[in-house]
Length: 205
Image (cartoon, rainbow, N blue to C red):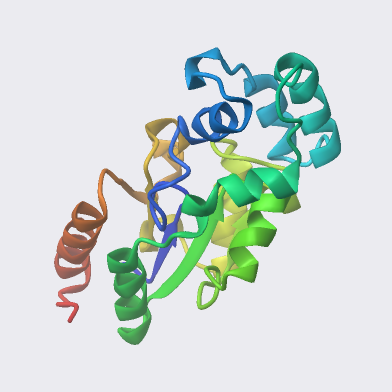
């Protein structure tokens, strides 16, 4: 039986934030093609809070800001409004799950300034737990992140469904968690309802 569903945020609860989303947002800021942006080294440190937003953008401005806009967290958020545009069908699904007694949580790799933007928009409301890489200093696919989620939920892995748009962010199969790769809002809704019907013998409204 599924007793909790954990959602990734970017690419699941919002269509922004997929694998190429950061490069696209930075490319827009600097007036460059996203393929020219090289930020993976900085991204990996920022999502777990190893560097500050000022250090992140300071280094990016050295790489790409000469003669162009000098970016910072505030400007990035202002240009990344898609990140706080919710996938309404998926939010409705989460509400239906809660109404049926199934817990909903969030497990997200995210920058602190982006998380602050999402929280201010109320888009974490209703989800419990909300586990963020920037706060816990661990990120998917580190097994410790999923284990922390199970600990907070107080549930065994086989009673939890995890949804993410990136296969590389799925928990290890040995953990035993149910998983679903997200490709579109309607696919998420349809597949989750099918899983709940199969595992719980329950039809969501």
